[in-house]
Image (cartoon, rainbow, N blue to C red; front, side, top):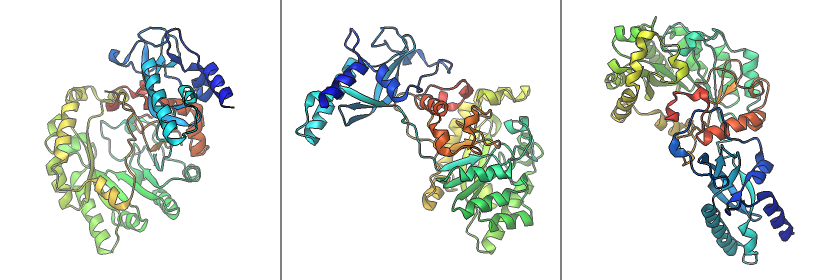
Length: 442
């Protein structure tokens, strides 16, 4: 049986004239649908190497688990894919290294094993991205009472999530632990927002949201606390009312701050533990120095922690909606990001990471890196209000009707071949054209 296994593996694997191992047949047997995309953002020239099979300078490294013999896996190993010959291979030096390690493993674990058996590759698994999601970010509405010029939501169809579809999404995601009711609109404008919170809480799901903070009337504040909403983040771009209104068009800073104060006062006076209140915002070249004063002011009005601040989004799909007189702000987005990074560590407000650790809420959405190049390994599941799952919160167009969380289980979506191939490419740092401008591509 061992001899037959070895012969089968050698037949599947093949050898090139130069002694490199051709993985193509084995790769296609294990998962033929995982293929580096041709229509992707171009990789830097430095990423291309000489193909071990055809010698063309069009091969890139990709990650995979490689099995030697019947049971020895080499984790996160490097393989090659060539855009010239469209074949998969492992370089001779890598193969030699892995076989020696496999034989040493077999010698230690299975003294009676035939060492030669571990000189042959018998399986490959390139499904290395995060596959056990527990967080769903779903969009309640694209409607908003603010008209922020940099918000892509103002250029999307203005509508609310279907309530029955929302319930179906929870049914189709049985492993869900944290629900983020966040999108490109003001969540509190959905008339059934608090019903959605209550349904999720009844299932033991933690619920978080993001608000512009303008709708904190006494009745809304009471509902927020009674619904047991765990966390609400408020967006503040400046503590100067005029500057605030320049970016958050139709926004009233004083109203927002007073609403936060009323919310914390009601929560504390009535013995509610939640919601905890976070702080977010967008900074520009002319406001890059304001983060410390924004945080101090928000803290005085009752904000509990800082979540995140960001510069204007340089992703191409966002740039397309910016007014012409604002495009010059993009030139400083990187330096603004660096300033935000340096100031965040100086704030007196605790971070959301501390809150998440205390509450045992796994809110990080960046899975392990691949070790090869910048990549994307989102741990959250993102859904538009249509129920269409996309690779990240910044992709606003449905990609496949089979990825709809209203109609398909999370397992069916994750095991869909098209979905797997998109995740495979993003994991390996081969980005979709829709990712153009995202900071992860740089």
